[in-house]
Image (cartoon, rainbow, N blue to C red):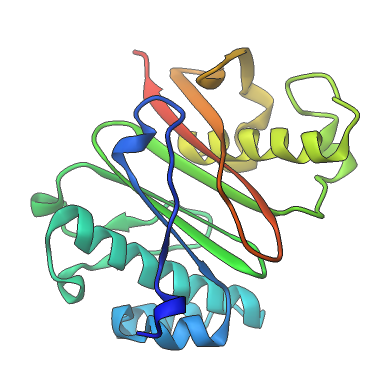
Length: 223
């Protein structure tokens, strides 16, 4: 594998418990896909054909390869023995949970980067990644569970906190109406949605160009 195209580890310290996970990032590029080709399976390539957009198709393949790379590290299993299920608008999962145990997976990507997270344990995981020059649509921004901070960069960071929380809960944008902000402290932002308490925090250390902004969230069921 080309040295500079090896998966880039991403350090995560918040929210509490997130540091138990393993997180990696790669450029969404043809060279990165070639470097990770050994971590792809026939089913991965077949599933990718449903994406017509070239960058999304490549992001799907890179995320599948990165997940398998990270799972091999976390579970101590050969990467080619790890079967993944990837479906549109659904969280990825390991198909053989008997030996995998409880492990939460999450994926995010832009046109230029792909990010994955693998977290052992009972919590649900959500990661989000957005281009630094992107802003949420005005309609979505008005539905955020806090006042508009005014600054575009802060608005984008807050949006990633919401998006990561929705991914961790598992409902996506459909869950936005029921997401309530309970408070914020040094450990991140605390949300509630139905039976779920969700901690979300900014993702630090995303170096590289083009720049990206991200967040990590953990959801735990309260009843």
